[in-house]
Structure formats: structure tokens, C-alpha cells
Length: 309
Image 1: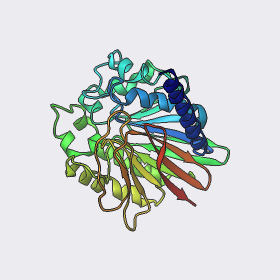
Image 2: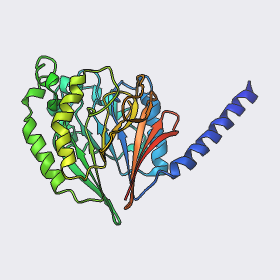
Image 3: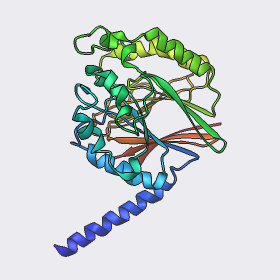
Image 4: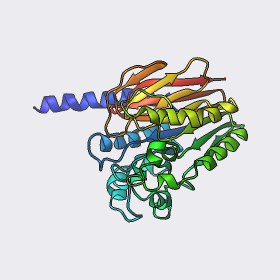
């Protein structure tokens, strides 16, 4: 038994060393994490993936975490004092190397609760950086700049807006105001890279209502294409990894998997890669290259989207 335990320990050490070697390759001038669909009170794979994010952060040194919705399953939060803040977030993402700036957006599950409490959690937590329900942030280091545009996608979808009993705050948001803001933001975006993130997909393989994607395509695509400067649109919501390219479209469409509980997936038109693994992603930007690497719960890089200039 003791020999078996020693062998297992050595195998784990070797695997960790191999992972660390691969993780080193993820580092860039600017490195960011992306996570979403996390909030399961630490159950399923949420806690192990959170620990993995912390261990990897010691190697890749991310500047911030993009938390792209559904931090709280299933009915959002009720207030700034809701216990879910502890069981879904504070006690789970407790690794010292995750004491970073977190930039969140609402997911559909946040819209089942008090979205103002979600927005204002920065009054309680110094790492919760959410100035508005949609906003933008430029990261820069040396000569590299990347603009992340954070969208509030639930109010852009009619099925949520029309269901005030379940999603009471969705119909209160001014959809056109957000789209006009996005247009103006992209018009003035001259960074090396522009990445747009939101909770819901524009394209994805999923059993969820097709009307969700059709609303996103109708409302967002004309703006995202207008200035020819968006490299990636990345989202969550579907609980698996997907990388989709559409013919004649310069934008890569990425679904980032759940950081707690994944679902099956199969290829569709335009699928470059898909996986039912759960995990998170690492975004790396240099002056001439942008990468988004999908990480499974074992810490392995299973796919990388690369954009070059």
C-alpha cells in the first residue's frame, strides 16, 4: 500500500511538472483568465477547477479574471449579504494567486435575482470590478494593448425580456442604448486587439432555444462587423468548449466551458473544435499575436485559437 501511494505521489508530481512546462508557454505581454458558469457552491468540479486556476496563476501570472456570467446558479443573489457570495465565490476562489481584479458580467441566472446587488458587490469585495452592466477595459503592457468589451447579453434576447416573472430586471434595460454604446466603443477602439465577451453565444451547438442565437445575430453582428476590428467574440452559457469560424467572417466565435459542470457537444457548421470537458480559458496578447487557450480540469491545453498580424 505504501509503495502504491509513493508511486501515485510521484506520478502526480511528474504530471504537475509537465503541466507547468506547458503553462509557461501561455505567458504573454498580457495574460488574462476567462471563467463562467461557475456557481455550484463548490460542488461538481467547481472547487478543483478553482484550485487549478490558482496553481496555474502562479506560473502564468494573469493580470485579471474575466467572469462572464452565471457566477451564481440558480436564482442569482438577493442582496450584497446573500450567503451565496461566500459559497459560490469567496470561499471557492480563495487561492492567494486569485486575489486579482475580477471583471464580471451578468448571466441569465443573475437576471433571476437582484442584478443591482450583483453589480454593486464591489462595495463589499475589493477584487470585484464591475462599473456598470456593460463596460470596457483596456489592458496594456509595454507596447501591447488589448481592449475587452463586456456586454450584458440577457436584455438583448426577447425570451428573457418577455418573461418578467422569472427575469424581472431584463425588460428594464435599454437595449438600444447598449447597442449604441457598443457602436461608439468599437468605433474608437484602436488597440492592438479587441475581444468582445458576453454570456450568451452568437453561434453555438446547443439544445437551448435557437431564438437566443438569432436575436444575438440580428442585434450584435452588424455592430461587431462594422469597424472590422473585433478579433474574438467569447461567451459562456452552453457549458462546453466550442470554436466556430464562419466563411467570410474574420471574427472567431468561442464558447468557454463551464468551470463546474459541463454538457455534451457535437460539431455544427463552422466548428473548428469542440469538447465536453469543463475548465476555463487563458487569453494571451502580444503585439503581433492573440491566443485563447482552452484548459481542461486536468490543466491540459486542449485547443488554442490563434490570431496573428
